[in-house]
Image (tube, rainbow, N blue to C red):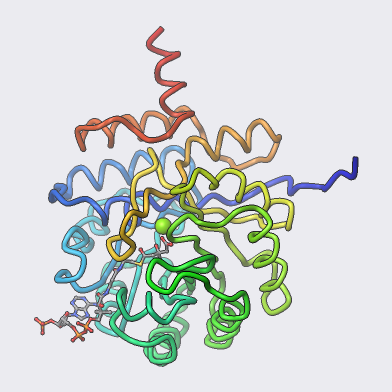
Length: 305
Ligand code: HMG
Ligand code: MG
């Protein structure tokens, strides 16, 4: 059987504190958010998506972002990222000393309208200004592309639509671009098709896979991405999340499950799985429910004997 060489090391971006918690209905005290980020920092993540400077009318849960960024204990070298939709968000992110600004577009027109209230082209115009300011201040710039494999409003999303947004984000200077399966509909062949297409327009080493597990495909899709040579993945501790603008979307793939698979494949992450399991149990207890991570719950159960 033909063997594909998988990467020896990957970067895991922990998105739970933002992409996970943004979806919670009950207001979560800043203390809990700070404790979560600090635990994730201690577990060894190189990049944590910790905040979102969007309109609190649109995503009320993220209204405490400035306080969270102020109070977390930063570890030198760790990148603390925040979502920024416009210049107002940029000013807030700058004041909060974020290391990486994340602009977030979509490969689907319908989703762009629902999520950020403008067309894809308008969003890129807004982002171009944010991108310039980000670079002027010497910060990293990441671009997220939602609905790269399917959209809750328009259904099919052509591969060329994803490639088009990748080029636009590349042209305004993104250092990294996330290919996101916001509603978790992708399967491995589709992942191969999209990743192999976008790599024609953007460096492989700067592309990341952001998978949701709605249809139980996230781990298979991460493996398919590894086969394409992708070395950056997003995941969410305890499987927190969903998307307020994508009905029925379950959480991002659980970090514990991803780390367990990487360990088994002999792929280095530099992250301590045991501490992530603790962080997952901590946040799940704080939210009053069981973690969604299979590996996290299995490890916790084994420990309890
Ligand atoms: P809008 O209503 O079209 O624009 O929102 P606006 O400029 O008229 O602003 C409306 C109000 O928000 C105004 O306040 C503004 O001042 C205020 P009012 O005058 O009514 O009192 N405002 C702000 N407040 C704080 N910070 C700001 C800001 N901007 C405006 N930065 C806007 C347009 C883009 C602001 C809005 O649509 C928005 O904030 N959307 C964010 C939606 C969001 O965060 N969605 C979730 C993240 S995307 C995601 O999760 C997917 C991803 O994770 C990938 C995946 O999981 O697959 C990336
Ligand atoms: Mg997500």
